[in-house]
Image (tube, rainbow, N blue to C red; front, side, top):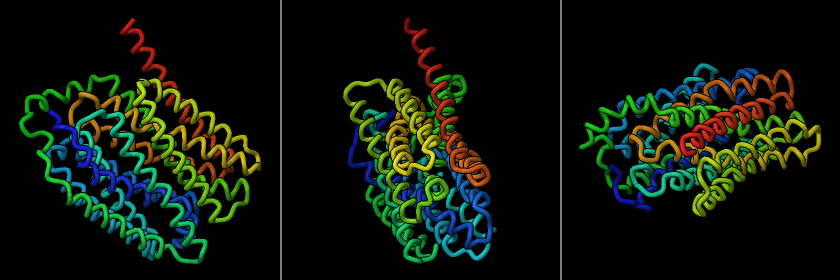
Amino acid sequence: MRSAFRPTANLGPYAVLFDTGVYGTAFGPAMPFLAGGLGVSLSTAGLLLTALFAGSITASASIAWFGHRADQRLVALFGLALIALGLGGIGFATSWPLALASALVLGVGDGLTVAAAHILVASAGGDLARSMSRLNIVFAVGAAAGPIWAGALLAAGAGRGAVYAGMLAVPALAAAALRLRPRDTPAGAGAAPVEADSIPRLRSSALLWAMGAVLLMYVGAEFGLGTWISSYTSQAFGAGVMAGALVTAGYWAALGVGRIVGNWLLGRGMRALVLLALAITGGLAASLLLVLASGIFALGILGALLAGLCFGPIWPCALGIASQDASPRVPAILVTVGNAGGLFLPLIQGAVLDSAGPRAGMTITAALCIIMLLLVLGRRGATTLRTA
C-alpha cells in the first residue's frame, strides 16, 4: 500500500535523475574525443554505451526481482558511489578495456539509482503519470546541462579528464539530497500476500508488456538520437564541436519542455494513452525531418528540437500507465526492460551513421518511432474493444 503523498520526499530522486541526465548526455559531444583518446573508431566507441546499459540492466533487474524490498534510499546512495567511480575511470582510463570496464561500473550505478528513484517516487503516492513526468523533467534539465559542459570544455581544449572529473560533483550533491529524506518502509514490508501473488499477474499483464516494449524502443530512440545528434550535425552540416553540443543540449532541453507540456496536458484531463500516441507520432515526423534535412542546418536543428519536444511525454506516460495500482516492483521492471533498448540500439545507430552516413543513421530513429506507434495503437484498439 502506498504511503500518503509527500511532495518534498522527491527531492532526492530529483537530484538522482538530474545526475543521470548530466553524465548520460555528455557522451554525445565527448564520443569522438573518447574514440580518439582511446585509439578506437567512433562506432567501436559506441560499445561504451552498450557496457553502460548492460550494467544498468543487471542492476535494475536485481531491484525488480528481489531488491525492491530494500530501503531504496540506501540503494540509491550505493549507486551514486559506483557512478562516481565509473565517471573517474572513463575520464582517466589509459586503455580501452579499462574505459569499457568503467562504463560497466557506471551502468551498475545508473541502474541502481534510476530504479530506486522511480520506486521512491511511486511510494510517495499521488498521480503517478504526473509524478513520473515531474521526475523526468528534472532529468531533462541535467540532460541539457551535460552536453554544454562537455562541449564547452572540449572546444576550449580541455581533455576528457577535465570533463569527467568536473561531473563528480553532481553525484556528491545528489547523495546529500538523498540523505535528507527519511528512511522508507521497504516496499514489501507487511505485504507478503500481495507480493506472492504479483508475479503471475505481471506475467499475464498485456498492458505491462506492451508499455515495456514501447519503453525498450523509446530508450533506443531517445538515447541514440541524443548521443549521435552531435556527430550527425558534424557529418551532415560540418558543424563544430560547440555547435554540435548546443544542438544536443537543445534536444534535451526540448525534451524537458515536452515533459512539462505533457504534465500540463495530463493535469487538464488528457488520457495518458492518447498523449502517448500523439507524442510518438510527433517524434516520427521529427525524425523524418532529420532524414530529409539534406544539408540545410536550420532544418536539422528544427528536427532535433521537435524530436526532443515530442519524445518528452513518452517515458513518464508509459511508466505511469503501467505502474498505476500495480506491484511496487513494476517501475524497476519497466526501467530494466526499457534500458535493454540502450544495450544495442544506440550502438546500431552509431555504426550505421559511421558507415552509411547521417541520413541513414536518422532512419533508425524513424523506424523505432513506427514500431512504438504500432504498439500503442494496438493497445488502444484492445482497450476500445473491451470498453465498447
